[in-house]
Image 1 (tube, helix red, strand yellow):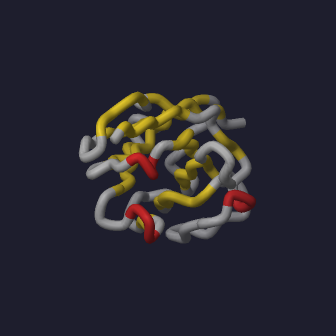
Image 2 (cartoon, rainbow, N blue to C red):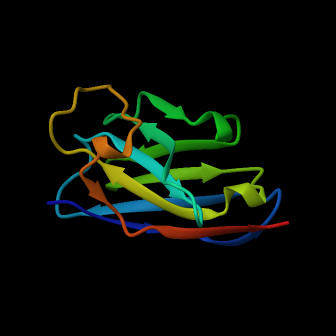
Length: 128
């Protein structure tokens, strides 16, 4: 069983950059694809970014393209979401997730339902 813990959230100003981390325990992440999602107040959880198990393939949502990237450190059992040019619309709780079964090497997953373990989330607030 995998436990995921996000960290690095906080309050920033519009235009700032911030990186959030996702650390795993209980199992190694290096075999599993990862995803980042966010949920703003009153809105549904939405896809932000995905990264394949080896980190060779990544994808980000259109709304954050050119501003957000994701990376992973399999040796350190961690995944990262790097955010730049933040704006108030990016304010949300950010979650990392992993899929530990039935996945295909190199494949990316975009739907929340495709992930089976989730972290508790970290709050990112962007002031204008």
